Length: 146
Image (cartoon, rainbow, N blue to C red; front, top):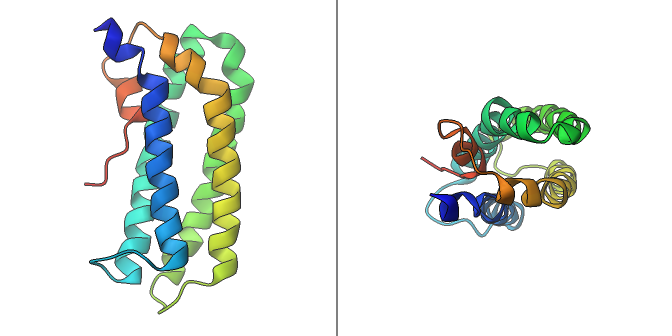
């Protein structure tokens, strides 16, 4: 059990790599097997679920065990709300044949900054957690597409 828990920070990084790959394919049009609208909506859904799991599960556990991270967690939650606004706009635009490049570039820049900050501030704490609190941390660091 302890070996599994020491990997939470690494799992978060793996999830972020997958998000970066999904966004990259959306930006450059190299997604396969689906049209733009489906890929766009899939990306938005995956990212929203990931952030919701962090806000509702993983962040409260970290706050409990590492109260000194409270300002970081508050900032990450604010980022999540800002990113959600961009995702809502992207979902509205996804009915178009082409999503405006500026919207994707804005999302990519904000998301990259957010992911790097989250990794820098949380990975060590996540890797040192010894309590998953009923799977909340596991759900927060996992990236599901289904």
